[in-house]
Image (cartoon, rainbow, N blue to C red):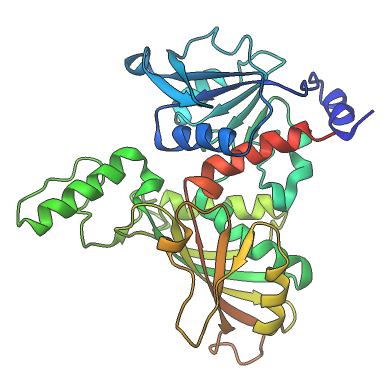
Length: 352
């Protein structure tokens, strides 16, 4: 019996067929669109693709493998003939439908609805792929910033245990969805034409501006929801419940791809050269670290790329003990930060 079959039997789930039927829930959104593109680009061995969205999108079509696929409205019977459902329609839809999916269906959910549930694995295949096989019908796709940060942190954590992470994020419009991306375009055009523009999606003017992440701020702690999520999720993904994390999350006027500045303290001293070599061999990571040209990870270069870019590796001079390194990371929020990671989880489930 294969690993996937053994673990499926253990968790009471039916093993997946080698060519599963797949549904994308939220097919018209920014992440849903990328999920469809990833399934096609990676030649995922599906037998049938089902596209689901809200009633207002029903009847529209999307292109997959050169043919039109109709988009249907999501309802209680939509997943009855589906083996794998990729959800990217928000927490409310996930809460309504994911837990109630048929026993044969594995849900890979991009929302925050179940990420911290004890019985739901939170998976980045390059970090904790085995956890995916312990699902009870739902696998959570982590927060985009947690995924992108984790891709750089995990290989280093395996070699020299991390004690503390201080992070500052520069998060693109794509993290708030297609409507926020359009607001950035429209507000930028209005700004350049000296026209007034009233923000509708985000709480502050976006063009040529930087502001605290738009998630709700906890009045008592002062942290916003994004900062809380990233810290909690990184600890769960890396199985490091004692990891100390301080993070400031900010929106910047970039269409897609998040950038993150990290200061990482290790239990033992580690040189930037050693860290660079560890990361050079890490799956899904690309080193961009050219000091002579002042060329380091940028969202422009990360956009549309599957790899997470890591560079600007250097000692953190605020720590004279040599235990702390600074680095810069950039990754496409819609790809590795969301759609690609979800498709990779689905691919992992099919491995025999």
